[in-house]
Length: 133
Image 1 (cartoon, rainbow, N blue to C red):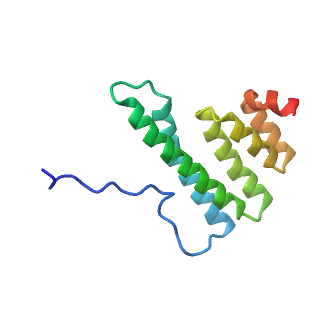
Image 2 (cartoon, helix red, strand yellow):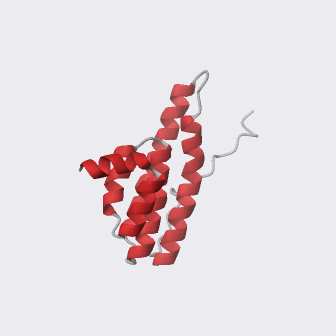
Image 3 (cartoon, rainbow, N blue to C red):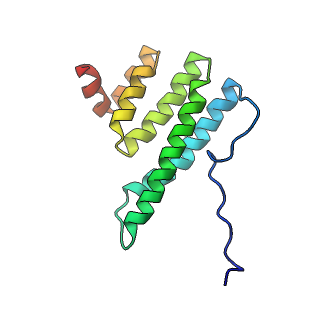
């Protein structure tokens, strides 16, 4: 009965706008991408049952696509404070899924010392490696 099967809606990071985003619109888009990817991160962390490996592989690919899109948008933000806030959202998402290597690299990309300190205080796992390097 293929009548009732719907075409899956594309994820927010798959729908690309052709118009260039301003800093505020880019920050909002990153926030929306991170919110959508957070649901995927929760599913990835949950214990799986039957057929969980295939589902996790699909979820991991979707998560990586979301992070990649968010980082590409963040690179185009010219305002340092907005870029730092957007990177903070991406870092929190990386920590949630234990992608600490990516999170640590992004912590070093934050220009504001205050924002970096707040993130490392919120996630001590990032502080330990950041102090060692």
